Each structure stands twice: as structure tokens, then as C-alpha cells.
Length: 403
Image 1 (tube, helix red, strand yellow):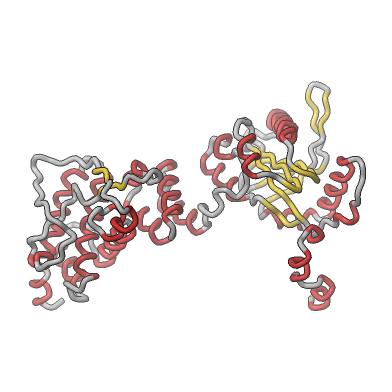
Image 2 (image 1 turned 90 degrees about the horizontal axis):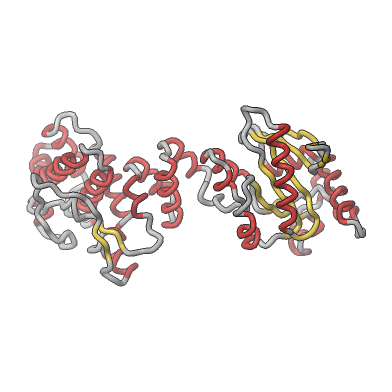
């Protein structure tokens, strides 16, 4: 690095150094929000200087060298990491009441000041960061870490969770989640479950946010292990295409249970396709699985074991619209499975009602008070599809010829 560059950016490095030292005073007490405030303030300072071409292209590298020289052993302030601070600020400019983004989005100055403790031994010069002048380069500008973040009075903003999430996790959330709603979700999940950085990264990659309401269920309330509950939520969709079931062969009959038995038999004949439809790691245990307690016999439709969840999965097939009585029936099956069949090392059994139609809002309302983990999914077949969609599918005979 040229000597002139080091001299040029010495005042800027001193400004950042002051913020670092001031933040370390409180951060030493284990206050995560102080570290975030420091990074947010520094990120804003860097953003104002670099985005408005106050600094040259080598500024961050020069500043990083100066900081390492003056603060031996300092970590977390490389050129790359300071760019992350800038991105952190720019991703959350809504938390800066002086930013144009906050003004445009909120159309109000209704902010609440964050409770970041100040110290009698640390004094910061109050400035207006929105004014871009020669002070940015001269070093007269001071980073006010105690007032750099202010929370807009938005009902859905996760205030407490936001400050519990470490900066490293914030960088992954910022990079992987593009919408505010998705970021709120991962912030809350990280704070609530104390997720490691690697686990968070995998959840974002697997689009846990997109799968959070995949199927109406009560998994999050009935499965004690948060990790298993999250996996269960992500594993099941709210609707499945079981194109190997030919409803025309089933026909119209008076007895509904006979129709359901036909569906069951077709699933059994195509159990591999059924498993592939629902995902990996399913093992088929049987259909009309015999259960007995106090001399009363029960025969749940389909029973599987899932290695990923380490639990039995009981499916009840219904060819009509969802009814609340199906949950009561499934609840009884799960109670017997857990008491009589489940191994000590296995997790509680999970039940799925698989029916042709279901009102999602209604299901979510009635399922919440059941104590066993259950969900409701719907299914359709190619013969149930609208003509336009079915015609768009490739002809099965032509596909066989090609294969």
C-alpha cells in the first residue's frame, strides 16, 4: 500500500478505531447489541464515504492496515469484513431514521431509541450522519454507536430477537434472505433456537422460510425437539400429486370406506412411487397395521418409518373433504403406536390425514389443540386435473417409447 494512501485515510481509521474501542468497553460485558451497533455505525460511515465517492478504491484496505498496526491482535476488520459491515447497514437502513429509505418507507419519524447503555467513561460526539461534507474525510465526523440504530415502530419488527443474533449470523441472513419477511423469520428462529452459523446457513439453503407453512399441522407445538419439529414442518407439503392412482377405476360406490380401500391398495401397489412422492428415508411398515389395546382392535391405513425424523408416520386416507373426526381417529392411533409399538430410542409418532379437499384455515384452527403431532395434506391425481393442465402433460405412451 502506498504511503500517501495510508496518510490520506489515517483520519478515517482513527474514527473507526474510536468506535471500536468505545464498543469494546461495553461489549466486554457480553452485550451483543453493542457489537451490532458498532458494526452498524461503522457500516454507515463506510457506506457514506464509499458510495458517494469520497474515498478511493483502496480506502478499506488502507484503513484495515492502519487498524491492525495501531490495535495489535484486532480481528474482524479486514477489507472484506468492513464491506460486510457496509452491507449490514445498507440492508437495514430502515433502522437509521436519517436515511432516505427509512423516510420513504415509513413516511414518519416515529422511532424508538434502542436501549444501548452509555458509559460515564465514554463520550461520543453527536453529529448528523446524513450530511456528507469534508468532515467525513478529515476525521471530524464521529461514529455515534449509541444512537446509530433506532427501531421504527413497526408491529412486526423483531426488536429483541434482532439484537440477540450475532453479526456472523446477520451476514448469512442478509445474503440468503432477500425479503424482509424472510429475514424476520430467520432472525426469530436463530434467537429462539440459538442456531449455529452452519445450521442457519443450511436452513436458508433449504428454504426453511418457504416451507414454514408447507402443511397445516401442530408440529411446532407438539414435538418438543425444535430441530425435529422444524424437519417435520419442512418434510411435508400441503398437497401431493399421486398420479399413479386411477380414480376412474375406483368408480362411484355407496360405501366410502370401500373407495378408500381401493386408494390404499393402489398406493401399496405403487409404494415406491408413494415414498418418492413424499421424500427420502421412508420405510414401509405395512397397511391396515394391526393395533390392539384393552381388547379393542384398530387398523390404521398406512404405516411408515422415517429415518430422518426417527419416528413412525401414520397415514389415514380419506377420499372426501376433511372432517374433524379424522383427527380424533388419528389421535387414537398415535396414542396406541407410542404406547405399544414405539421403541424407547424413537421419537413420538406423527400422523398425516391425506384427503381430497381441506380448508387450510379451518384445519389450522381445529388442529392446534390436539396433543399429538398431526398434519393434514390433500392429494390429487392426473384424472382430477383440469383439462388444460392434463393436456399439457406429456403422453405416457410417448414417454415409454422414448425411454
